[in-house]
Image (tube, rainbow, N blue to C red; front, top):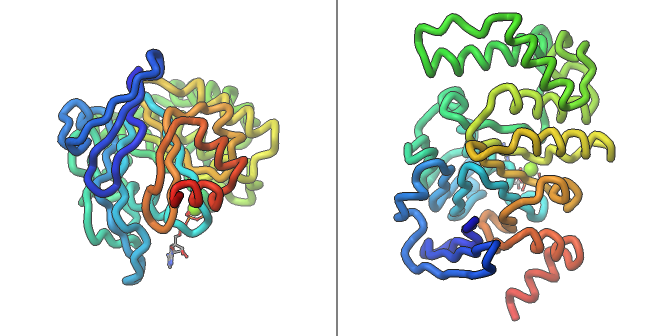
Length: 292
Ligand SMILES: Nc1ncnc2c1ncn2[C@@H]1O[C@H](COP(=O)(O)OP(=O)(O)OP(=O)(O)O)[C@@H](O)[C@H]1O
Ligand SMILES: [Mg+2]
């Protein structure tokens, strides 16, 4: 498998590594001009984002192909969640430049709902409660909206089929079936909220799933169960972008590429060994070798 390891954040040139043959190849033409990467990928092109006139992202370039797992690591407040929210279309984040493409289609102007229907999923760092709406109803409503977007005549997923799928995915994540009847995130523990996020991902089968610190708040067993659950969902049609501060979830998810974000930009990209280096040396250690 040939994996794009690094994109020059200034000129879009890139290099690949062929994992099996350990060959690396440098390409000076911008990655975005490669037609074969336009399909089946999330492409973030020179993204500039402000919040209340304060620039947060200052030129992020990223390609996450379906079938690959990419990780983003980086110090607090560098814009990782901002990137995730912007890809999802949160109205609070103002795009001052750049473009987001999914499957070759420009989704920059779409609403969050339309992006969800197009196949983007975000597991929130801080999931919000919706008292009065059960987990099951919330997920069924989202699934039906997706089905209707595919086929306007769709009558919705039959309840028995929905229940069967829901129970299967809850078993996969070792969740108590009674959770399905509780109000979404209302009084849920930190770990329960994170599990419900992944349950939604499992039910919605997105093309690109962004997991924003899904590992935080999970105990050691839950981390393994949830990570193994995510691994069973991996397939050639699913690209995963996982935002994390720690190596531990990456030990399970085995990312193809690790990106380091700092000060609103992707500073460095590499293979899974980069996460290990960060764990050993910290961001300061990496920065000083870059400067040398
Ligand atoms: N709604 C908002 N209003 C004002 N400032 C915001 C808002 N959202 C984010 N910011 C600011 O943008 C910067 C980037 O925040 P962001 O949440 O993207 O960081 P992060 O990299 O995800 O950090 P962490 O690792 O702590 O989750 C921070 O300085 C934050 O205070
Ligand atoms: Mg964050």
